[in-house]
Image (cartoon, rainbow, N blue to C red):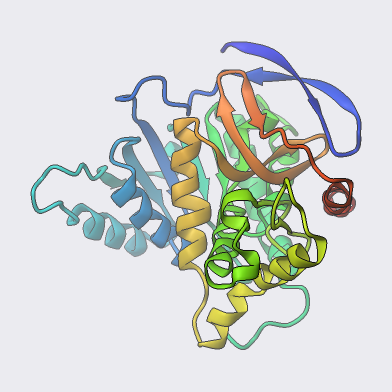
Length: 329
């Protein structure tokens, strides 16, 4: 394992140096393909599989699937194995059911197990924290297994809330065994927030600048920060776009459906493929003491964050979101 050192500046204003590992999940050549294992084949996990199968032919060698429901695994293995390009020119990665002891024999492990997802019309209280309470113990169990197995691949968290579950996985994975490095764990939840903000920017002229100048930061939830523009930041406009973005899922719920398709594809499938390729993406990574969302990419030396000249009023919003996450865990 090759390691280096990188100095980063966190939102608390403290400079720190952390060891970085050469990521085995990063493609080294154009033809290099990675093994991805997915656990949890519910609405999000199943839709994620479709995205990886259709878009991941050049990046994914094989998709391994695992779920406590054996019939669910068999169903997805059969269905996806019957997805073929009519001309035979588009590669579809093979899918197979894996055993529990094979979970971490891969380059990328994707955690999609989700409990406490409220039924449509049954949303009460702080849904995000209810999901955290339910999913935390499960992600901790998998993180301990990963540590015990000496896993050195990418541990991608898709289940909500990704930022808090990433931190829980990191802490649990370092209780014993070989430990998990902070850059091994990434949260895939911010991609859909960028997509939702883009959706409104395409339809509302006042937000049009977001499409070429805007960014999203922070957690996938109420502390999300949407900036309509970095170079010409407008506070009130950005706050309005933030509110629309945060509440976008309620529109789908109002129609009587769970809003899982866009998150599974934008936040998970397409983001994971960009991570593997070493391309810019929106994901949550370890920053100081929390997992924080922003535009970044994985390099041979570790995580590279996009460097931006942030207006003070925007930085204040980011710092507030960071501190709120720090207080929770």
